[in-house]
Length: 81
Image 1: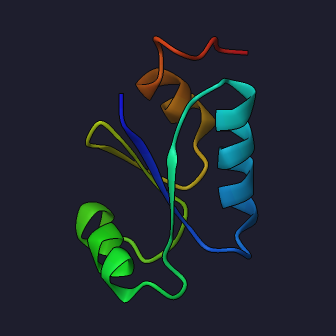
Image 2: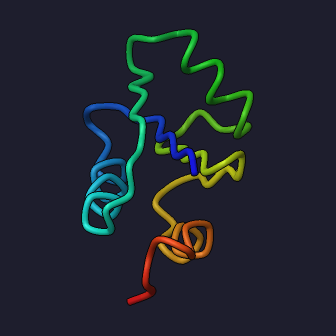
């Protein structure tokens, strides 16, 4: 399973998502879009959104920190709480 999270350094929801991943032992790749125009374009193309976080779990796009959607997308790795 591949998990990518597009973030900025000042985004509280990005931190919540990363904390959620750490708590549930989910390995992820963080892509900071603040100063990476190419990554920002990639994120926007995937999600249609400019806001962060944008989370890509094996091609399933989740915008924002949507805990139920994350739990569903990661159902084999995360126990609902």
